[in-house]
Image (spheres, rainbow, N blue to C red):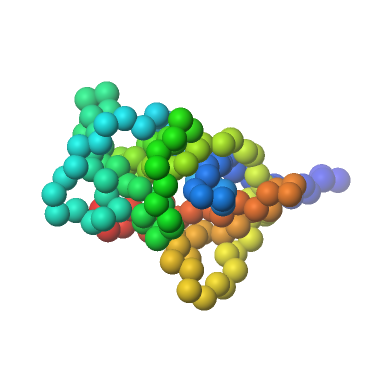
Length: 148
């Protein structure tokens, strides 16, 4: 008799902070995590596009996720980071308050995002992950980067 086992896939997530919430994106979409450096402004871009940086010879657009999600402005601190993400042929930097953690979560622990009326970032949410006492908001990078 052969034993049938359920295959539960693990997903590795990078956890980061914006204001007082924790968000997560899959590690396989993250190229690197950098300290915030000088950003060159680019005229006539959306308000959340802060400009571009030269990262190892590659000009990379930088998005302020606080601004993208219509969260209150915050001055950069020592823990402010730029998460360089890649999706298909796009590479973009996301300014976050802090990059906190790398977590392994099982895909069956991801719940659909709750229906919340009036939340600006709702369209960018791919689900929520409850781990221990933490509640992580899993982001849809493709929707965040759609208009860039």
